[in-house]
Length: 349
Ligand SMILES: [Cu+2]
Figure 1 (cartoon, rainbow, N blue to C red):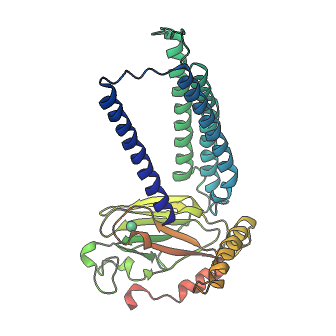
Figure 2: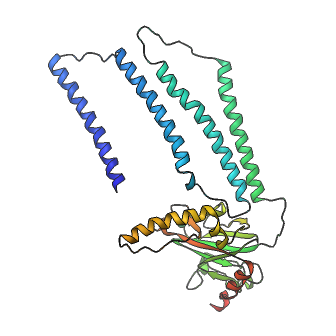
Figure 3: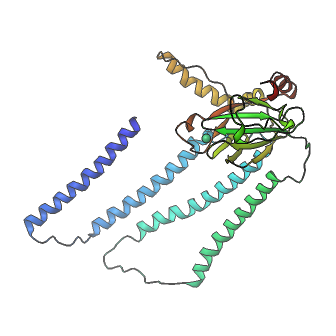
């Protein structure tokens, strides 16, 4: 709220200054008849040039400061095997962006200062240079093409791995609807039964076809439990609008599109309990809980927080979008099997 008020005050101040300068100009016109043309003086040019240089220096200091101050807000170590490839791609891209930024921005502000208006100095008329055009077109084009090819190779490595490894994936359907998630496990036959929106009703939230025998042992749940170390094949569907299943700790995001099935597979690398032991996760949990402790001391009713993997909807899908989330529990395979065995099959609902 304070931020909005400060922004409003700043906007109003800019408007007031604009109006004031209009008034002064009108007053000048009324008093002196014709308004003299505004030709900047040597002093104006020096002042504007210096201000521009100071602004540039301030901008660079702010960027460097924010890089250090907010480095902890980046995502921690990935919780799925393929996540390192995504993170490396991200780091390479960020490194290139910052190299270009730290070359071009200081030059931009320095030249603005250096070539400010000086009495008697005329700008050099330099309309065209083929060699320069070639250099500043071909270098960015080559670098961008390199990033795109690298990105495509990473995508191919994640989506179509050459090493199929333990290829007995656990199949789980992630079903989005305004505004919640339902999960369907394939049951003992490792196959999901057919589903169609026309069968949706009562307990049959995802529209399992009652005539398809493969669907009889499917299991519907509202919490997502997955075993560590086993490949999980997620199949995404949506009942109404486009949702997007976003599991940031596993570096996964996939759209859930009505009328089609999209998929993504990954292998969880840490159980929830193990991930909670990692240093940066503990650091985050303790800093959040410090803030919560202060609120509790003020008498607010806030529960302490512990880390959990999350599934969030990452498409603005309607008024309840903000709350379309679920916790993900990664467990040791034995604990996962015990949990799954307690769930009801579709035929028993
Ligand atoms: Cu959604």
